[in-house]
Length: 417
Image 1 (cartoon, rainbow, N blue to C red):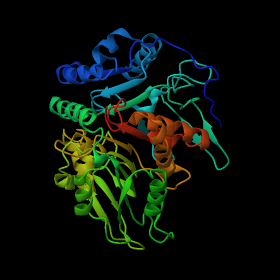
Image 2: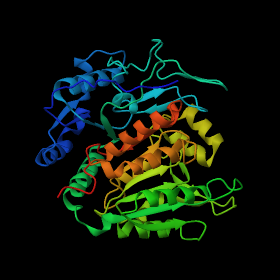
Image 3: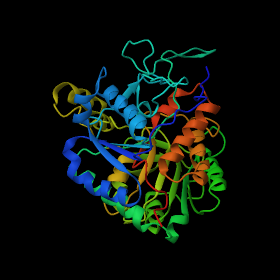
Image 4: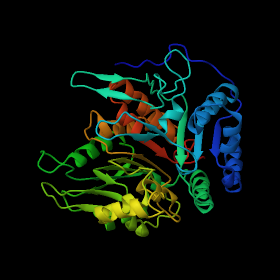
């Protein structure tokens, strides 16, 4: 199975740069962001989900949003799409490209508008309302729905559930873009890893960190590893509080945090959501790539959270409680929506990921770091990483779909001068 980018890209209008899509309930909180973007020369327009649902056709609300994005590309010339809203307020597409799980969720669906011939890519070529279906055999991978994968716009999501969360992240974006440029802390990078798979030989996370260090050689590294005892929750918070432009984490991930192992040990060294209380880095906000599982599982719910403590209690809650399906914020979002610190943007997986440096989560992350030198915005880094990954590992739809950007896709890396 191979993928091809369009031979002759279609040229559209260039009236706007960024479109924000949001429920109308967040309009007031988003207006300062619109004003700021315009003042920075990023022509910005907002479209509410209510306007889209009533004004565009489609088999469901997600497809209506995708048709609106197509229209915005063709009539307004937009390059960036910012989705604002948790997945119960602004839908995310469920697809069936997973190796070992029944489904996965992805925002790449919204970014991949066209197929190789320039036609609308529905991600449902057989029209059975199951998107992105893939059949795996030992010899071959069959892309049943003809998914193109290549992103045609740069996309990111702020999965806000409340007006207060919108206000917090809007303030963080404005402060980052206006106060970061020229700051010495931005030239730091934090590298975090350990022995991801004890007994397999080598310290996989640390080895991946070393490659990242070589790629990001213009940055001063702070190395936090389990092999020398420098990685723990306290040391990571200390490094974050000193300030860093980027963090490269390579290890295990969960909906409520990350953790890895000392060499050849089953012991866990964790950094969980509760440890974010110690991240008081103010406006010194990093961009983080989580080379890990599940950190951006945006459909994580309370029943699943309870299941970590008691699987039997999870069954009870699922059956009898009205709160079972209520969303619970996942780790990669918690660190972005945190006030007085945390991160400005994260890239994480919505499902279980697999490791490696040539493919999988590690391979995608290395493409992300390689894209830094030629990118102005955080989403350009991810888009270029996705393009490179699709070209080099054309059969792995799963990895490229499950990783998404939590943050403003038009975020100017390092801020404006």
